[in-house]
Image (cartoon, rainbow, N blue to C red):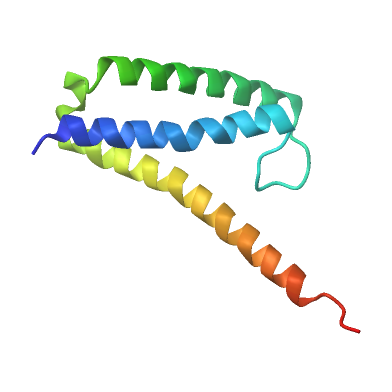
Length: 110
């Protein structure tokens, strides 16, 4: 099995999930799942993380799978990290759908 290709695809998927989280916090001043504003140092970290993640994404697309990605344990760790960030977006989507459904059902009727 080509573990390097699987690890590389999981790496790209993880970056595509993680970079928007940091970019949203940088631009809006808060994470999508938090009601209040973030502190200044969290926004600074989010800005650095989004720039670093974007750079890693571009360089990974240019270079392709690396020889270090051949290990199956690396693929397993990438699966765990990718699953974590995908679960964040799925949970956020479900929460927003649930909130819209409840707000429509509590509307007063005449």
